[in-house]
Length: 384
Image (cartoon, rainbow, N blue to C red; front, side, top):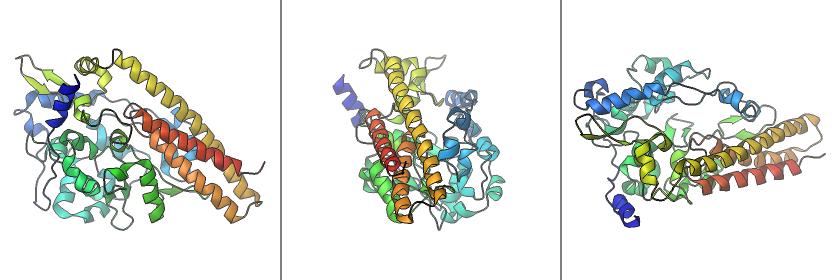
């Protein structure tokens, strides 16, 4: 079994990145329907993933933790990729610039590739007028049909020399399932690292600290905070991951299917591995009860994330009271603010990572440990 897995890893296709400035026009998903009918039909099934959870109701602490940005009022779980444009245009969070369309539509991706980073800073409504569809074939295939091509060039920029060794079936998903920020000057989507080694949460936090970056400032505490964004790639590829060197994202989230004529194809209905009998059958070589194993990891991570999130809410309120009391020097308050900022970052790195610990339970626990320790240290500095 180990030999078979190593052979699978060795045969992985290396990632490539699209050429830019070529004046390309997106070929729509529907235009490929006759060429790849089974794939197209499976792609349309993503519309069945139409349920969105209100995270603010589900996790009340974020109304306080994210205070100072719209996520503390409007934060729904992602629906299927089929709904990306509808979701980004209907959210209660206001969008001024087109950069919010990154990873929402191939029309924006192609426009960036054709015209350059200036596209990120055009008005949101101007870009909306050019949008024709949600995430589709171009995003991962660049109009080639079946070839995998990274179209979001910021991923290649961030990976540096390590990009060439990245499995194309992972790179396709990594384009969007990453932690990022908008460059303060160009407003371009930028990843906070320059190599695979620098993808660790410690290095990412150091990157943000060095540039003095914050996504928002809590108005009551004065803490300059970072809003982490879905770091699935960084988590899965990070230290402690036991699967990243063997399996790609697609291996686990895009099952192999067979049509009525007995022909095989790769399903483009993106799903949890637990929802696929064929994928769980493959995993059964190492996991007799994959569902029970994963659910155990997720339940533990969820329990800790909620408990530490509640503690973070308490710290935020206590620090706000300390600021209002006038009993602390700015030096004393800043010492607490630094710990708050860092504790919130490590907590958020887990909270917004969509596998709930399953991608890399070791790194998940490491982040939660650091978050709790930093929050405890901050609370210890607040006078009784």
